Length: 239
Image (cartoon, rainbow, N blue to C red; front, side, top):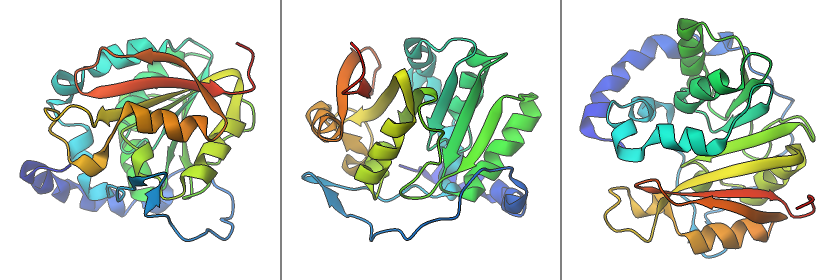
């Protein structure tokens, strides 16, 4: 997923890594974590993109390639909501989500790499944003509050979960009665999407995995150039 140009840009991360311990992340003591899966329901699980690839997330061409502003509009975020940017990385979507739920709402920015949260912290402070809460998750637990989250956004990250069932259960438990998950993945069905196959998912596979874990499809948005957007709610939530 990372170009040669991006690799050159990663040199700037060295200073940020030194600040990892200063990130105000929220995390509980990790429980024993089961061995990671390599396959799930017929799909090969992709390796996690390391923090060294963070510049790719904020590349100048991203808006043109993915139409990110249109995705943000489709999320229908409202002031006062509690939103989560799951696998937030360096906060490309986090900062923009925070603006939409302000002034009384907040964004829980979850990542399993403290280095990513350090990069996020730099961008949040530079932007003067005060309603972002970094959360250091684990491979099995994003440490979200129970029954409180109005929207969880996962952009091109779910396919990397090494413990999908545990994470799906934890996210489901965190949703408010009307809460939704926006699952965004590069289209496997489209050979013209210039992303490695391991980092793509088909609509059929997305639906298969999520409905098997206590979710129901509540909405779809098919207007982005490269990605599927599927909205899921709890399968026991009122329709």
